[in-house]
Image (cartoon, rainbow, N blue to C red; front, side, top):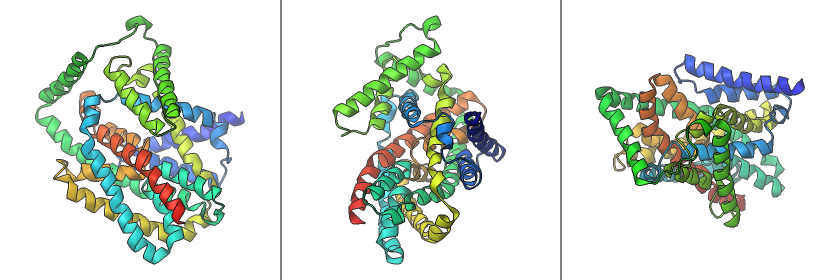
Length: 393
């Protein structure tokens, strides 16, 4: 029964976040509410091993990440992926702008230990927090080992609503584009999909009555295994997460995987909820005293980091052919990465419209930029930033 109670706590926090997001039209993101519920729960009655007891073990989370990343590849084509080089430039340069501000003004006021322990999380999200915490523990620097986790909590409280606002503004702009000529816009999306199908030989396997949920999940698992195996052969020279996404795109392009594969298999929500729970499990070691002690330095560093990202994105928006809200949202992906960038974008789109065709148009224009920007910063650049900062502490 204890396992069921833990699952009850997890699902309650997640659905409450979804309800608040719907009620506020995504002005308050679901992930923010859920994170606060987890934080309060860990300070009161949640068991510290809540996530494991709710069935979300580390092994299951590895499965979640692999399958979900392959799934995300089925939401875009190779053509779309290559088009997002502008989003990569804005995201990475925005990250650099954040580092410049925090490593100059921030160092002057707060000293190197606080800055070096927290900034990699600000510019690298969950990956930065996990790698920094692991590195500090390995180095025996236990006095500041909680700093990356605290930064992770606080900057999400700030960044989630900000990203949501930027995406909401961009979404409304795109809605006006769609409203001006919905038929033409939808035909453009359909013709692009048809063009992709003609350019690549379809490998559709046992479509129809034999393309069951189990078979769809089996095919996704095959792609994930191949991605992990190649990552192992390359000694992780290329991040496994990136390989899963890329091979998911290729498998979708050649017809091995259908569009939106895990939704068709009915497994997407359960896997996504598991990943959300795993991320928020990091809050179980944070105390109110820790938050109070370093609250001011961290808030100041967040403000400095956001200023750097904002200035860079505003300067690059017009040359890169993006509206400033979308450019700033791309830069902000450095603060969260996957799956938060996906969840926030999907959250905003679903709250802006119930029209399936309009949702597809909005996602088609915003999601690839957010995903690729997040992978460039959180999955790739953050690894290099953490390795450098650990040597400087």
